[in-house]
Amino acid sequence: MELDFSPAGAPVLSVSQLVRSARDMLERRFPLQWIAGEISNLRPASSGHLYFTIKDEAAQVDCVMFKSRAATLDWEPAEGLRVEVRALVTLYEPRGRFQLNVETMRRAGLGPLYERFLKLKDKLGREGLFDPDIKRRIPEHPRQIGVVTSLAAAALRDVLTTLRRRNASIPVIVYPAPVQGEGAAAKLAQVLAAANARAECDVLLLVRGGGSIEDLWQFNEEVLARAIRASRIPVVVGVGHETDFTIADFAADERAPTPTAAAELVSPSLQALVSRLADFALRLARETGRKIEYAMQAVDALSRRLVHPAERLRTSRQHLAHLAARLAAATAQQFNEIRRRLDIVRAKLESLGHDAVLARGYSLTLNSRREILRDATAVALGERIVTTLAKGEIESEVKKRG
Image (cartoon, rainbow, N blue to C red):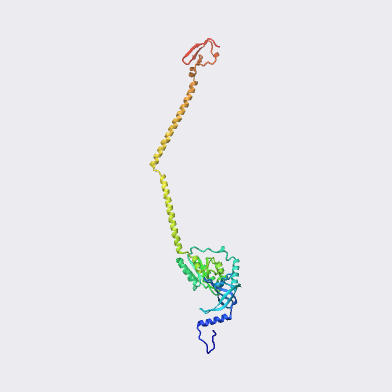
């Protein structure tokens, strides 16, 4: 419907009529159009739609790319990318907001900010500022936690709430500093240095909420990256959302995807600690009980081996009597053997004695001088000799020698 805007017939329009008319004029004036710019403030929705801003040095415009169109992309849109979008220029009537309905999108190169980001990242990386070997270990049980952020930041509330929920017994010190705007990076670096000089905390959280690449840019400045690495206190950086990466993230001793995640990372859960303590107590009780049981079993085993002195004396006496009996038997046996041997020797001696020889029919002749005669020439004629027999003696006179 054509409206009459002449002074005399100017109608009174409702807001929706006005916005709809403006929308129609924009869509007629700017049919599908290619527009170049840099992606900023990219916000993928759970529905699959893409919401973002494209901008240049002088202006920016909101864009929406619905799920059916976004699904056709064979690449991943990212913050800071230079793109060309084919879009319908329109108004979002419920809010009267100027926006582009993007039909398709193609890459046109990296935006200037993102190029600066990559150059600085490459420079500091080559210097070794991001080397994992120089990262400080985050303490498991910090005695005090420091938070570096703006007092007005929503991230501060999220961090304090998380720290209080997880373990309210850990003291927290907030070091205020701007997190956005020109010069914020230098101020953050000064606050980090001051926190190190005061040496009150075991770990520092450097946090802020999400935003566009411009909002987060101060965390991409070299002065802040060097201040993080110069810190003697471990620094955990939690900036923006999980998909946001800054130079500070790479320089940090630990990067958390969000401020809340940073708070969870440095604060041991009191409930988990109590649970672990209860588990340790149970394990200690079990182990102590087990050792007592083992000791009791050892005592029982020793008690079975323990003998009353009277019983031990009785056993010793029995053993001694047994040994004495064995000794007596052995002595008797040896005595009998010796006696047997003596009898044998005696028998041999007796068999060799002159009585035994005489008894076998032999005789013994002595001269007058009572000397044994062995040779007939040893006596003289007429000499008296004595011959001993087994029984008796014969005295005779030598009449002849032969």
